[in-house]
Image (cartoon, helix red, strand yellow):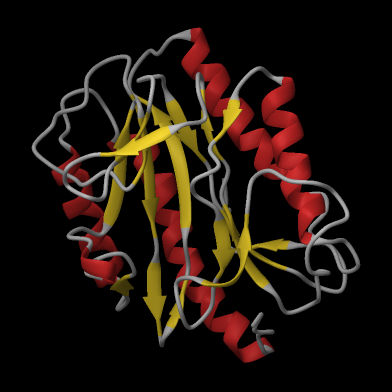
Length: 250
């Protein structure tokens, strides 16, 4: 069941999302060669708690950290560790907050120092695909219109949409209906209504769209070892243009 949020509930989510957005902006200065993914996780959790909020991911389904830190071929759910980032890596940081029982969720992929042209293009196209889907986040369109627009942009640029993971509704739970694939046919799925809140999150690989889960039962990597990028925002469907809660001031 898709839950329509009240104005009060959306305002609570705005507050949660504001902190998530600020943290993801902060990562532009934090992520450099030599920092470990565990250090990034520590910084993020400290920042979340400083604002009187809870890290949405820590303990969720048993996940041990406040961020998913996914390096290079890791698609999602990378567990922070002592691994230190190196020049030329890319890293996806996925995180969220809980404020008075309501969630936010967002992700970005960052270059570590100077990266390859292919990596730059992957990060750019993944972000662009989100905004292609956003064009259809309006009352009257169907969810399939959003999914199709994302897939079309990714594949037109020669990359592959990951099909094993999807976006989701979000509110008083991290994952709510509807599921939001990053692929599909236009004109299908539920119609969008004002008050829906959606976590839209393209995950894009350079090579195959196939993946595998590592022995830790969390970390998902591209099957061929190719680079993967992730871009996500929490979005409110309104009577007019969609509102991106986690976009940040920059």
